[in-house]
Image (cartoon, rainbow, N blue to C red):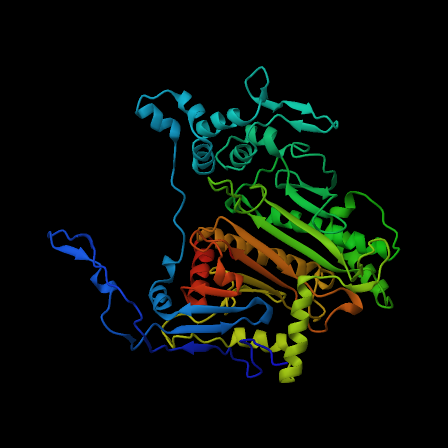
Length: 544
């Protein structure tokens, strides 16, 4: 098959340009001219222009760039040239406004209205206030409206009121769950309330803590087991601990990122080691990079002759940012406190038909990195060339689509010898960034975390850290991050690079019919977004 991709063996990106000129036949039967209002001069303004008398001739509509995604399964990006040209003249305007201060309590005081009005607000207004207020007093009042908070003799929250249901399950006494979640996830809520409502281990349920990373006075991360998970076999969540509150990227440190990612590396390596029958000892040394690297090398040595392993893919993701619409739609992550989720996936899964007790065979289990392997195979079959070699060359050889030589043309935000952070030529989110692993210390391509040595893991951690910092500095408040890994062992596709994608949600890009068709609409050139990100990283002194 012919693969659809902007990557070419000529080491240059390719894309289409629509230069539309057309005639729209006027099939309208009726004309209804209405007055819309008036100008400041008093002259009336009507809708006359909406009712043409003849066919409509469009001699020169906006040019539209059509950029096939490097990975065909991710669709195509469309850029309106007029919008993008406007952004190109000032890339620093590519940003979201900062959140404005809002206090309902102060408004009531200024209008001499009793604060008992809080209790009379309808549910949608309570939810709106819970997500938008920046006043701790507002949020404390809202917290008291949705749950029963116990306090110590000094008036400091010490816990919640709980009950047992008919089945013996323990539940917090919460009268309005949506309001509870919205309040607890608002950064302006005092930490003492966050602690008892959601942060203290056990406050969100009985998930067991099975791992921990603790650097005193620097970072503290718990690893929770999610037993009954939407991921078969359960998954793990690395959550910032109750004594390390991280509700914003501004508070995220390099030490935090190292801890979050260490638990991911550690859990994945331990699961693989146990699968291979390696003997492990549990002790404080497990949190050291030396122990992790020793275990990684042991696994690789034992994988060499392994022909059939069960767990062949990692799964890692991070939803940062929480919000609730007044209409009860939760808009992003389950919790504002920074956390990451991960698991491992089997190579195959049993298949069934009408008899759910007896398998009819096996199929390959899905992992998103497999789709990249398929692109590589199809690309090689079509072009007799190596996909990632060509892709990296295209990134390095990138040229602007508007032919401007006086504006910046690089897509790369940051790189070292092991990883590269860049803006993809075809962004599937208007602000998408990607991180690509390069080679490890032995010069081998890094396709998954098992192939990443100590220095390479540090580079990946740094790249993820910088991606989040750049996006947050531009005003992004909700970002989904995912990993596209190569399969582990013999199941892996030779030459596949480990890839991460960072996908911000923007206020006016909720995702609708275009995105459902994998058509992604953009209003800027990727080069200008890269320039905007680099400016923020330099401005905030984030570069290493």
